[in-house]
Length: 124
Image 1 (cartoon, helix red, strand yellow):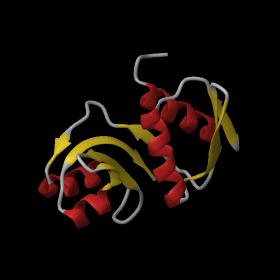
Image 2 (spheres, rainbow, N blue to C red; image 1 turned 45 degrees about the vertical axis):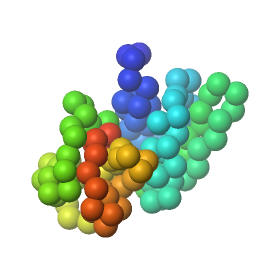
Image 3 (cartoon, one colour; image 1 turned 135 degrees about the vertical axis):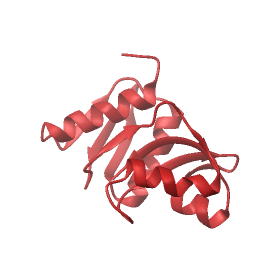
Image 4 (cartoon, rainbow, N blue to C red; image 1 turned 180 degrees about the horizontal axis):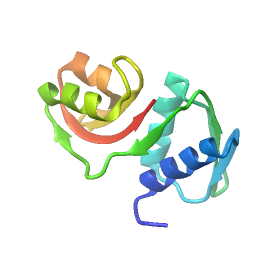
């Protein structure tokens, strides 16, 4: 386990998906990981997640791939398209999760609001 709970959590979710599991329990989590899972749930990549004491139970939905982006690049609105081509498999498939001064959001929302930010993760 490293210091980056977001990267560890997304890695464990992806490993469970590759192993064919429908759910996974994460022992280490953070508020940032919970926010990322909330966005993934809205988009349907995660069926559900809930806190059970210190454990986080995640039910995997129609997830094909997810990972944290390291190093965390800071992007302008003009550069978002470049990074979607780098991290996502095809146009309009998947999301980049960006942290902005208005909170976490997908790359589509950031483009609509015309704001940049820091890249955290991608999910498709």
